[in-house]
Length: 389
Image (cartoon, rainbow, N blue to C red):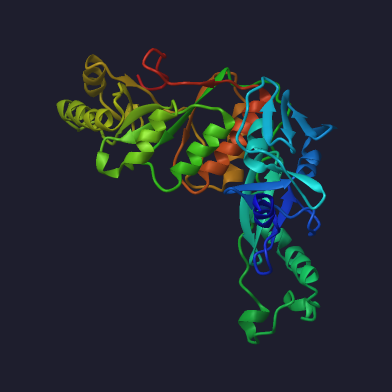
């Protein structure tokens, strides 16, 4: 009965909830051996999806081995275990369905330096696995909507009888329908150089702003990639999500504080606001912090203000590069940041935020860092501040 229940959960989605799979900019054929599924709250795909992304596979009895970038995952379908090349075990096993082995998307992407996203196209959900060389999700959706709609119609046996000149949709009449307004062309997303001549000596990942509903996915992405970061929390603690702040500290990330001041602010008042925020941080997590930044950069503070803060024991940090995840798509934010990485050999402090694009940006960026062997650095009290003073 237990086995039957598991198989029921693994069956492809019913009509009206079909999910497709794409690899980079290629939509995979829609059939039972390619459709992703969800098990225990996680997304799974056939292991072959990863083959075109440079992941090699081999089988030893009932054990499936997957390898890329010096990393290996071994899945025992019969016994339900999975471990890596260092014999670390994981809690997301593989399953056999439709004559193939399905593997967990998040674990495989995190281990092999890949990214993934789920996007809505033509009323359907597409699971997209990428290696950082693909176009943006929005560009993919625009380019593939017709192909996806045709694939869905064919899957359900629905004939495509609508006029082609109207994209398969009924005529609406009127000059507005005949001459739709043109949209300005989006600038091409920069190409990511996979064999750069240089790379940063190290990267500090730093998140600025109040935690929100997007932060959980950001923390999941960092955890999957095995990277640590600093979170600069506003001194206005009313903007904090308490459980998220607790999780930030519990998972080993560095809590820090973010001022929003100009050169006219009273220096004593600034230190008092930091002390009050630290009291709240200590109450929630049991730790305090002396790491500080300013929303407009520490250069916006006066010499007297910076002196007062450093004499009070605070270490002032600034980002050296804004990732752009707050105002751009994840694909564009990733590509521009990777370009910046390829143009410097200095230590970089990357400014990230808590936007809808941030988690996907983190997935793609940390995957790129893994492929290039770029080290993550952690902001601590003993580290030499960058940019702040």
